[in-house]
Each structure stands twice: as C-alpha cells, then as structure tokens.
Length: 140
Image (cartoon, rainbow, N blue to C red):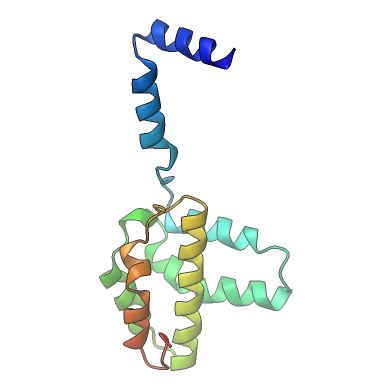
C-alpha cells in the first residue's frame, strides 16, 4: 500500500522511485544547521535532570565559548578558532581543563543530535591534540 502511494507521488512529480531514494539517502543524515548559541541552549536543556551544581558548571564553563562564537553556525567552527579561544582564556589551568571538557561534551552531544555530521568533525578528531597542548594536561 505504501509502495503504491510512493510510486504515485513520484509519478506526479515526474521523478522515479530511484531518484526519490537517492534524495532521501543524501538528505536523511544531513546535519541540522544551528548556531553555537542554539546548540548550547538545547544542550543545557537536555541536562535539566542533572543536579543543580552540575547544570551550573555546564552553563558557566560553556558560556565564554558561546559568548565568542554564539551567532556562528556550529558547522563553520575550525580547530584554530577553538584552540585560540580556549588557550587565551585568562583563567587557571584547571578551569581551562573544565571548559575544554564541557565544550568537547557539547560537541559530542551536537553530533548525536545531528547538528554536526555523523563522521568525526575536525574539532573532535583533534581534540586530544588540542588538549595535550594546554596547561593542566587536558588530553590525558
């Protein structure tokens, strides 16, 4: 029944089932375009069941990152930008480590939510290298 209806729709549109399947395959796993602020807001909302202190830490430690890149689409971020943001923070090494950890967690969450491609992004692939270069031994 569904196959007949799908065939009718394709015929009305002047397309074949094969073309429709290819289009579906190409767009099905495409990332959703969102800004860093939007991703951060959704990420924090997804952690609403966590303890208050944990939510505050997540919020505080991702804030400076979002302040700098908030309106930028998360897909357009580059490792160099993230590295510069995290290494130039005027905070102690332990704070840098925490912020790096929470930003990395946010990126992993964004990938699961299809805000980033399923394959590892450049930022995720190089996160260990970036962490090793920061004070406080982030990449351990």
